[in-house]
Length: 287
Image (cartoon, rainbow, N blue to C red; front, side, top):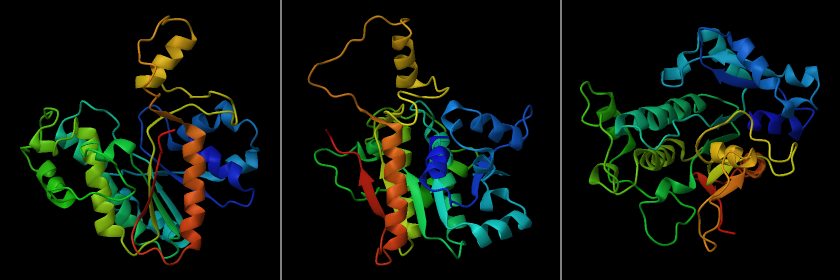
């Protein structure tokens, strides 16, 4: 939602914004997009501007997102920037679920992106925690996993799968990560290097993303109630009166619009720099 708003705000001359939408029994794709655009963060956009947001029904786990041939022709003719933000953001999923939700979907995204003749930028939303199994300084580079992403996808797709279990923290199964989520993000980054080297590609690594900071509505976090966002909402409403913590540990979060601005700037940079030979990375720095 915030990325759509950022794109619409970036330029009045922006073209169509195609959004992958899953089918739901109670809502059509058009109704789902209408609900998104009814959020208060879009109030300053005209109806003409909102009409640029077009839903495409598909499944990110399928080849070519399960698009029909007409849709594929359209996006290959018109799309020049590809944002891959979808994923499973839960720390208690089985290794199989995390890989299918974050690595297989990335494979589908990069395979489709590579068929776009006008591609000027492919941006992948990763996580600052993607290399949390390493000690010391984490540089803006992709650290190679012991097992290849394609090998892990193959294992996850098997029936029965040896990965259909919640891994113990720091186990060899997830290469010393604390959970399957961060391991799957590291695998996805490796997949992008393997598949997108030579194409204009960027990897963005924020920490925990929360509300807007003074744009366009201060502290806006939408309808999200998950994890730290739910805690912040409960605290602001008075349902939680105290929070335990340490004075010398900074809040491991970043305003949503900071991330969006970084992604938009990254997009322009990739489109203008024709000499990038491998995926570039930007990650949140400790403040």
